[in-house]
Image (tube, rainbow, N blue to C red; front, side, top):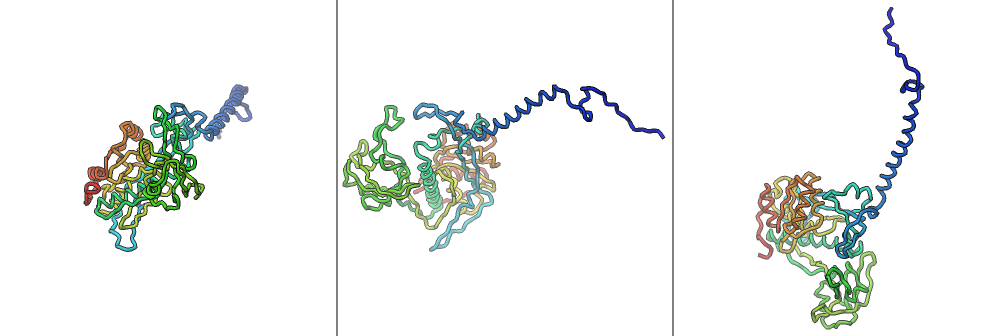
Length: 407
């Protein structure tokens, strides 16, 4: 028989790489050491960059003081989520109106402003939907606790106003009631020459802070700013009054507050700018579950979603629509922050239409279009324009009782 097995001869010497029992050339082994060291160094560098704070390298201009400052935070897209499931309407003493669950949804759009690492700062550089922030950009001149109070209060106010506007447009009775006395900011008595910074605050700044809620003044329970004004009617600048205060993280405490005069007016004041805490009285109990989301920018979205639930037909035409914008008691839509980041979040969710405030700056709108090139962005000036825009996009028209609030 003939043996068809092919034999292979392995050459001897250092060039026989890959042969059994034969070592690679020495120059191959020499390069392996620096390559291994380089690989380890890259891994360590990435790991360090992932935990090192962005403030080590990121700087942004603080225009208030015209100074470059560390930027440890960044404003980035968060998400777009349905509003319908967040809303419930009930009543204990009268029938609840018929509700119409929509086939598609109006979407609440959110952003976030987390701390950034050196690595995330490097990756996000040049991205239109990523904006580095200084501490003052994120919190203003307030503390994080004070900012949290305002953020949640603004969300609560936007919910209340949205309910008032939606029910009023549909012909239901709605009433505006006074709210708590909440300090938005301390009154500035003297500004610098440029008018960009406060040089002297009211004396009350020594004992009161933004975010404080005034419960009593000289033994009088304060249910509204008007109640405080009545207490001050027979007081003079320089007088002290006893005030019961509630502060987030501290609780209730009493302080003596020195009164002052309103700049340019013959009027005695405590020395702060109040937050708008007015409440809305409705014929039904409306609950909008926003969880930990803060800020006022969902006002228009809440208004449209309430109208959608309370009327027949498909307001969105059967496709999800994203909405952002504050809402005023007259139904007007106001500008918001983080529009480019919100546009990016909407585009990432695959939504095709985004209603935004017509009051937004041209630069903001341009940046939003750059962050989400394929997204249809439609500016609206008020809730009626928003309804018309939805009809133009294929939604069903709504039979509203009035075209403007108060008419």
